[in-house]
Length: 339
Ligand SMILES: Nc1ncnc2c1ncn2[C@@H]1O[C@H](COP(=O)(O)OP(=O)(O)O)[C@@H](O)[C@H]1O
Ligand code: SF4
Ligand SMILES: [Mg+2]
Image (cartoon, rainbow, N blue to C red; front, top):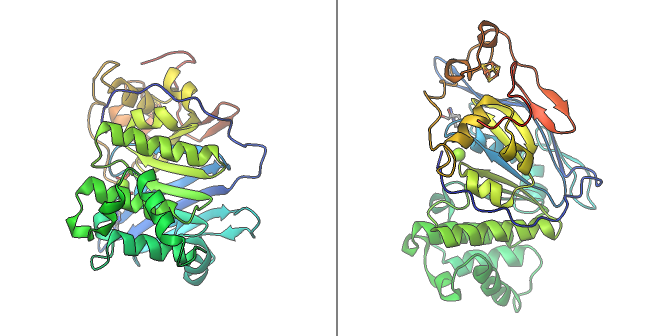
């Protein structure tokens, strides 16, 4: 995890929780078959995202964050098996079963339209033989802009993400990592999707551009879109998220409103992540995450947890769901306790 200084949270508008959820994920599970093992990449994952909500998914590298985003868009390779349910309810459209609807439907109505993706490795996702302008204008034309207004809109989107219009005339290999990142964000935002999956969208950016990008995503939510922000940067989550879901070893272990989670983490792993921040104890979580090919029957955090008891390693910690959020732990921290 990157332990950057937590910036003060911006003022947030209220998430439209009275509206039906835009995305409802129930029991989503992803397994990768390897020759002699199975990777448990995402396990029994539940979450909802409402219009206007910015949900941050945080957790150490390798815990399943990117696989979650790819599973929602049907972008996993052939050795993956996806079970569970993920329902998308686009405004004014029919409910889409993202797990069962099939590639044709995903390609025609979901990817890039109802759901935008800022991929984790934008440099490899950009077509190398097209300039940024070509890619952006093509995207805008595919989503209703005319030949006349698409170039103007392209300049506007470029400036929104912190690029200069002239930067669009470069080919992907002529862009720095941070510029490619911003171009990928521009391409995902240009069709104005009601749901954006942003997978580490601030990689390679300096702090002012990180904040610029985060605030841009926040404004999208404030005007009614929803964003699922995948990040290892807790300061980023704190700055813009309404709710934070903490993933550990393929599961969401705690999912609560941002302020409550930062003020009083209930799961020992969340407390450990917050403890690692420079403006707190600046002490990393001891030990390492487990191999996802070899997870214990009980809590995967047990070997690293100061509150573990014998039962923790053998008994799965069922999720408790209440007004304050969702938590999976046999011995949560008492309310108000900060690690
Ligand atoms: N195609 C694949 N085949 C086997 N394992 C994979 C595949 N893609 C991802 N994984 C594994 O799934 C786990 C979760 O990966 P990922 O979602 O990329 O983590 P992160 O939280 O860093 O985004 C990792 O252990 C990764 O090695
Ligand atoms: S279930 Fe037990 S080992 Fe796991 S986080 Fe809670 S107290 Fe720690
Ligand atoms: Mg990732």
